[in-house]
Amino acid sequence: MKRSSGVRLCATAAVSALSLALVTGCGDKGSDDSGKSSGKDGAKPAAKALSAAELKKLIIAEGDVTGYKVGPVEGGIPDESKVKADDAKCDPLVRTLTGIAPGDPAANTSRMATEDKKDPTDDATSLDDMADGKFEDAIKESMDLDVTVVTLASYDGDGAAQALKSVSEAVKACAAGFSGEQDGEKGKFTKVSEEKSSGTGDESVAFTTSNDAGKDGVMPLHAEVVRHGNTLATYTTINIGAGMAKKAYTVSVPVVKAQAAKLK
Image 1 (cartoon, rainbow, N blue to C red):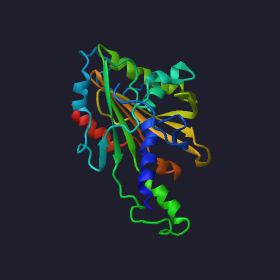
Image 2: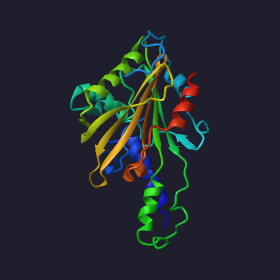
Image 3: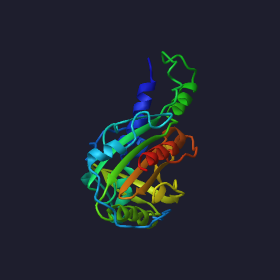
Image 4: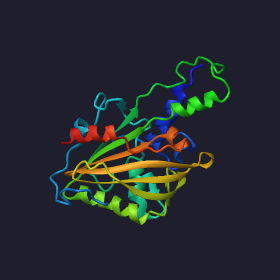
């Protein structure tokens, strides 16, 4: 019996739903499409927002990112009305982590980029094909892949700059951690740390959150928000296998570079 499809489904669903329980289970809720500045320009008033149709032409697609499969967000992006932090000042973080564009965009669209690695269980045809202990190791290895949700959102006026600022301020205000909920399911992030951003776009902020995943220990989740004029590109990356193995990872660099190239 093949097992790789189930493992990959769990890995992608963990990001697509991004429930606050994170990797304690797999979900498929939601629907699609609905800082510290590293900036060059600072907050300038922007032009009229792009339409959803225009954003769909600009967001990464299959073939744009070498080594990654790109497609719709499996399970979709959650309804923003069902995602909130216990403390309102941390709402921008919860929104970003669940693939929801911060602030009040005029239009948005999302895609998922999944690292395309050979699954070590692909050659196994029965549960007896691997010795005791080897199967568990293979499962962890199969989940050692980056899955990134990319959301593009466009804003009127200086909305993009203000939305990015709200994320940057929340990173500082919520450094000690925060609680929140999605569709009534509650969870807690134990800390928030600012990270070095990619340096793309006009200004950006990157951060990592830590979630207590029970027996698997602390699981990190990485995010970055980049402003390109009046458009924000939001990236959220999870790697379950790396988290379980306590191996460092970041927001997927090839994904950020490919998306930035399409926004130039």
